[in-house]
Length: 286
Length: 319
Image (cartoon, rainbow over all chains, first blue to last red):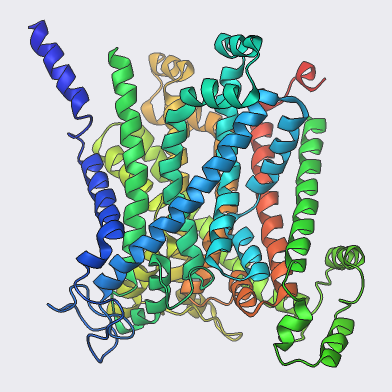
């Protein structure tokens, strides 16, 4: 009796939450997007720059499953083509935000004193500003180049990461193992990277995944406003923008890329949510 | 308490000053200054010098910053570089439109979201709660342009109930204005109320698990009275905080929504100015949006402080 129960429990842990339809769906969306980004050129049914039909905003057909865009190009192919730039920019911005935010956050937690006070005040200012307005001002000043946009997204999100990393670090700084490391005479780099970082990896990783979703939303909003990725290159937000006029003709062309953005952002959120709940449940079991 | 509130207000003012420095400095960093950018590549040096003198660009930066700041406090935002009209005039026309949009959204979204959050918290674990929670989570990470374009596609193009472009003429009567505003307001309201409903559900759900609610239930107080009186009174503080926060988030929603519906508001003015690199207009709009955001977040903090004495720092903590 007890043997079977342990068995079931072990199996539950092996496939955590695959009974949850929302997690399965979320993972499916993420895998599809990754596949489109990695193997895009082989998956596209048509050349994203080819004019399939003469009419703009053609209806779905066997040639173009999702219809054609404002220049008669295949929407599905353009969507797959835009996945790579969308994901690469969001990932680059989030990685930068975490490198910056984690380093400074843990540094503030470990050093305390004026380092902590200074960094915290600066980040508070960044956090108390509307992100999209910051983006607009920077683009107005420096122009909409890819580097500028990714850098703005990274800086804007680094403040949130900083706050999380600092709070997580501050919880640990008072603990014995940090005190012991200090007494051993370990340097700052080892205390942050070797002692504290391994203990805060999990929440930081969860934050990373959710923040990729937010970065996608932020960057596509900029592109949607015409201030992000510039034509002829197009990310998902840019695809929404260039086809927006199709709405009045009853075309779904701008809806598909918008749907892709929403689906991926929601999927990333749901995945982290479900994994978090799963951990809570297993924590309760033990 | 008063001292703490005053200090919080002082911090907000400092943030605004920091923002003004950043906005000013950011626009200073142009490769080539405003005069060169607006005259293009073929400008003669004489023309550039004349325009610089006209906009006062030949004076040192700190002086110009001081002038700009003093002018702004007096309501003088300088002149647009592309149209040469005073920025303040442009702002007056647009700010009212954005104000109407934000106000209408608030009036609709707040009661709907709080009601929905309350219902979800009441039916905790039930069908409404589960479906509602997933929907609200999904909607709160959905870009405004998806909700907006689907709304246009169905309500304006397929069903022809509402106009797709939110144009408000000067002579528009009330009915026409309601029709023009319906889609942008609905789009914004959906985004805002999703967040708000989520937070309301969390606040009420948290309160319902507390001992004083159990006590009231054990005394035989009815379900509705427990929620409507006992729980809601204690929720006012956190709810007021959350409402003010979500009004602040409206700032970013407005930027996208005004673009979808070609709505003649402040955000659209700013986006157009960014594209034209009309920096005085960008600076003025950025300051207005940041000020609105900072003030609303300040309001959220002060409301939380007012309703929850525990959020106030004790004397020993401040010493």
